[in-house]
Image 1 (cartoon, one colour):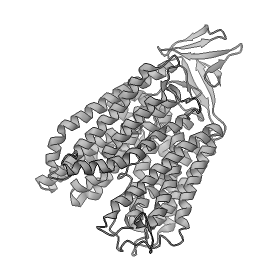
Image 2: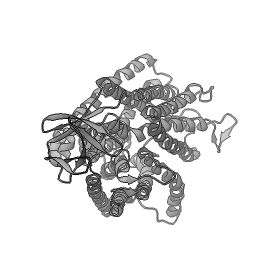
Image 3: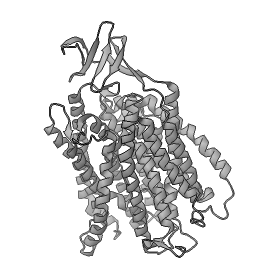
Image 4: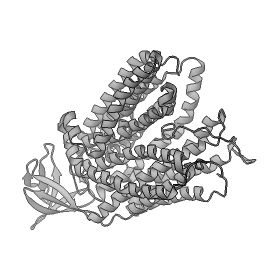
Length: 594
């Protein structure tokens, strides 16, 4: 979740020395406290919204799993792409502080827009060409016929049984002859996409530039910098923990709008801390002295970017089910040919980059530079694999928590979206331990190399899913696993995250040729964005047939998730072992870089 280095952009050299205005905060410039709180409330809004998004799309708009996971994958990939533009605009024209304010306003607007979802979609089913109304109750769905309401039960062979009041089968529907959908108000679907688009564009201005301001608090060579960023990123974990705990409760107890409203309020708090700073941040994050005033033009372009993002989301939504079908049975060629615009551009750019950049470095640099660049490219590719699996937290793992996890603790029933809070809890507990562990091992010459850390992360990501599959062996007649298995999966994944996240951008700066460090930084972010997109595709493989936003057969649901989790767990573990075997060669090609 936290991405300690991947959330930050390269820090520009600051022309002034650090200061604390005669005061300090834990031994750091006092301004760090305000930036810490600003980031905390921004992450409060973002992670609170993210905890609700897939469940909101599936249960309120009653989209299919394929469409829901497609939209979610597009959203998470775009929020990692837009910072590339937002950081460039801030460096050239707007300045980091003004960019953060602009981003905060757009993101708050997006969260507020998500509060207006209209009425819940009305489900229906088309059975052998005839349309029927569907009635959804807490744990069951019914087809309303002229004579009776028949309970819907999905079967293992993908046929559907319609059951009478006595539980006997009244009608058997062959596979492919039962199609579920819902009537949705087009206006509110379009409005929801506007909200996501505002968040996407706003995130591009906020995400890279708040970290840049933190960097300007310290003079070049100030050894407090790393510790300052450690404090700063604790704000991410604190904000995500609070929002992932409270937003799902409000959404479940009051309504979806209440959960999104709380996220919006958090974002407004973040904006107010920057807007009304009382001069505490004067001189930090200002626009370049020689930059022309382009504020009005940038605001206009930012607003015009919202409909561009909207088109990408709409295109994804229209193609999501076809992409899901291709992912399941069309092979890699069939999958790529069915990709929407965003997917084709992203995959094309990434594949071209990982091929062209090594070729260029071989021709432009010496043997040592080429080998170091090759290692960086290899690790960037492996990075895609890790984040593809890790980001199942907001999609397939959330659906698994909703459908096949026993969340009743006796004294409290945990909302499905709240399960994501385990990641924040484990990070808060183990991040300080790892921050001491690596230096302790380094002093003894035992610290793993960067490739080994990457391989451990991949193996951990795979083992987390394999552990959850093992837990499915102990389900009862309700086909639900105990919550402890999901918590344990997040534990393993969080430890794996701590093996890869703190070394990401640092690795790029150490291995990339000086002439293309910026380009390699962009490729690193592109790898994460690509991983987010692929994560949506993997979640589509775990798509389960739903009626009215609910599965019709919990056994089929459990078996589907277990099969997908088993497959990706084995693949990730295997890829991690391959990287571990390659690590001696990669370490040698790093030429002493640690």
